[in-house]
Image 1 (cartoon, one colour):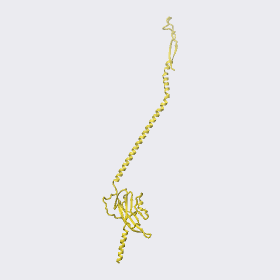
Image 2 (cartoon, rainbow, N blue to C red):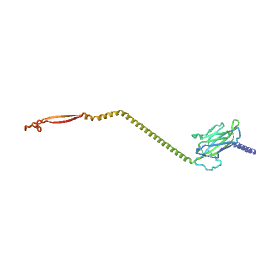
Image 3 (tube, helix red, strand yellow):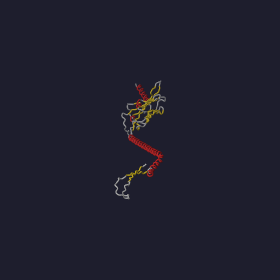
Image 4 (cartoon, rainbow, N blue to C red):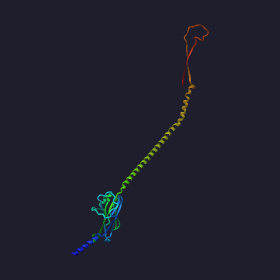
Length: 294
């Protein structure tokens, strides 16, 4: 009776020592505060392996917070180890053949979110989280199991677990700075558009002035070339016009018409020898002058 009890106690102690002898530590921890949209790296350090020829099976789990809110964490967080919530999702697993298998949780992100690196074989494993957001808050657990092959069968010899809490720090200045940068971008865009319109207006104005200048030069050149052969003709016409009024003065002719009218016979009064005042033989003449211009 007593012998069986002693055997059970020793067996339980031996199993507890073998199964819980692996030392696993996650750094930084137990609480990590990360600024939003930054990257963070969680390291899992494994020590106190029981067998040198054993193989490690590593798993990273996430227990997300129920309702992550964008509130900065307290300045002095508690350093006590956090309790793991029952709901856990597998992030990545590394098996016997060093193959990295990412869980279904990582497929919901459009871009790569988690990366697992083995810095030191069998000792140091790093989980890198890219572009941290509020949904990444939670408890990250690194579970390592040491297995060995015995008679073509893999058996667990020891295991270990370590957990850290990730909190996201939301800066209130981000929104104002983004708005300020957007304002600067809008002002810069407006300034560029105004300068472009000004330069375009100056260019079009210069083109219009140049076109008017060449058009005026063309209009001035064409009449001058046509008037040059007409200059002597104008002189001839002026000479002719100035000479024409002189022709009637020099070569004008005057015509006279002579009409003889015989007066009516009167009775003889006396026979005087002086017929000058009342001589019946007096002839009156009317001369009409007409000038005909050539």
